[in-house]
Amino acid sequence: MSEIMKIAAAAKKDSFRMAALTETQRNNALARIAAALDRTRDAVTAENRRDLAAAEAAGLPDPIIKRLKFDDRKLDDVIEGIRELIALPDPIGRILSRRQLDEGLILEQLTCPIGVIGVIFESRPDALVQIATLCLKSGNCAVLKGGSEAFHTNRILADEVARACQNEDAEIPKGFLTLLETREDIADLLKCDESIDLIIPRGSNAFVKYIMDNSNIPVMGHSDGICHVYVDKTADLEKAVPIIVDSKTQYVAACNTTETILIHRDIAAALLPKLRNALQEKNVLIHATAQVRDILSDAAASAPAALLPAAEENFRTEYLDYIVNIKIVDSIDEAIDHINEYGSHHTDCIITEDATAAEEFMQLVDSAGVYQNCSTRFADGFRYGLGAEVGISTGKLHARGPVGLEGLETYKYRLYGSGQIVEDYAEGRKSFHFKEFTI
Image 1 (tube, rainbow, N blue to C red):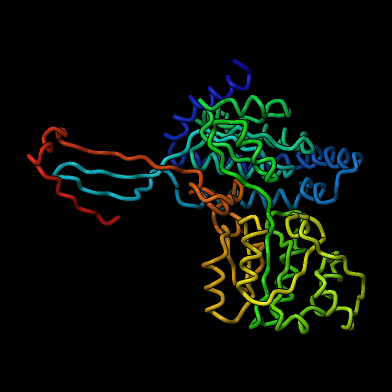
Image 2: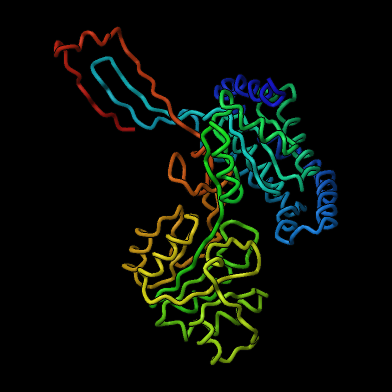
């Protein structure tokens, strides 16, 4: 048995104790984590500067460096997120249904932790704290593997989180949190199907597929974020431009950043010049279809610049950078078809004043998040009030969209009897008397 398998087996054993912790025990540990991070912020940010310096020396792309940065502001956000997590209701033991099967035979369905969750995530140190604290609040053990670019930051954060949970008052099992640090560890982790209950990979579609193909552990995929904004013919253009600019530029390295803008032909001539100027003020490079380029070639622009052609491969690309595609469509149906074909089922928005069009869009677009008249950047567990997230699931099983506390719970059935046996109900000798109870 490899060292990773031993670690996973220990975590599995501790997961049963984790599930039995009281809400007070878990919340007290969360409060200690928040205090520890605040107390050691100078050491944490110093380690992050080491990672940033190495990333810049290696010539890593700017979006990765932006994700990697973990300064006082991000640390403040993480600490505030932990405090809000403490305030959320306990997700464990929530009764989903209660039913009488017969007199004195009561069936309950209630929530419980999944067990041991393995998360492989990108170079965002704040993700480590968010995932670890969500697992703690939800009663799960966590085995984490972060990006090598954040090696020093991840290590000090994991050490501080574990230390806060391991003092004599904490009562948190030692197997609650494990940080893996080498690429080779991933291969061993994928073999731990007897100990790991769920794998959450955060990365490209190819990476998620690799995980699925090389493990028997259930996988909840967090893949590419190819998000869209469709501007319908009834859109308010004063709303449309700020929404699109925010969706594209508020934080370009996020998976909920818009990559393609679809514009109804009826309003293209009115919207495109304003939109181009607004995007170019943010230094966004535009890939445009021929129809878009034809309209803009005749339009005055405060910041004229060449537009690059938009090929099919552009519509399948997650840029995570100041680059966007623009295409004209003839109808809402064409927009919906484009999104369902080229999108990643993450988050897509319609800008429209027509409630019927909005409903059609939300019904037919097959994505985890469908919006009307607001930025795609709202696709986030923290902004949903879920207590941050371990990732955004673009699949349809178990959990979908931002995966917060509820996505880290499963359920079990409890049956309370008073001596009943199945034989009594055989061949119609005795009948069930079903009755639903209000929860």
